[in-house]
Image 1 (cartoon, rainbow over the protein chains, first blue to last red):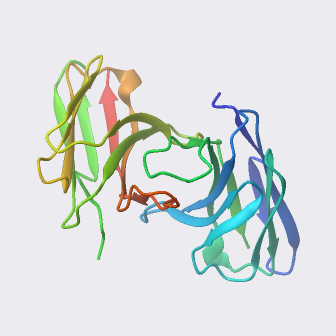
Image 2 (spheres, rainbow over the protein chains, first blue to last red):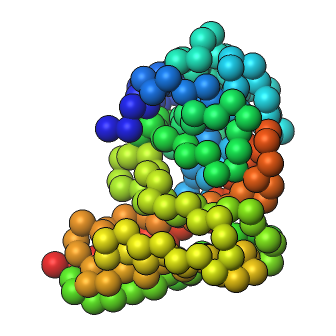
Length: 116
Length: 114
């Protein structure tokens, strides 16, 4: 138990569906992250929020839309996804506001997403 | 081209054996982290190394950061089934303020057979 929870743990959706992934951190951290983990590929950083403001967006398609209503919650809204978007989506949080590279990131268990 | 190359990709060993996994790059990292990820879970940080040549020990695990800060190794002594998992290395290219980007390797999948 790392203090970062994600729901749902598993999600199957069609290409025309709209769904949302939720992440909550109970650690009092200031930064939150979305990562994508695909088979045979490295973990890919998608979005970073610091103090509820988006600070990095790594050229992610617009069919992925993040939302950070407060420092404890992070959402990833999904719309008209493609089968190649099937992956494990991981949320993480870290203490730092400045986002030092040595800042420890605490990961949630992930949401296993399958797009049919 | 993969920025961080991890080897081997897969490793299956008997309980009690020793092993070493590697993380190599042509780039210089200001810090490097090792994570272990178990099935159905997110990665959990094991160690962060920041100084070239640094060696850190965590029980039976020994981590080394290369002198040039381009590579790292993880050595496990007397492996146990509980060591089974995906070992990921992740490097920070710029340790300065505002640097959120961690570059991950693909990982080494370790299976320790009882």
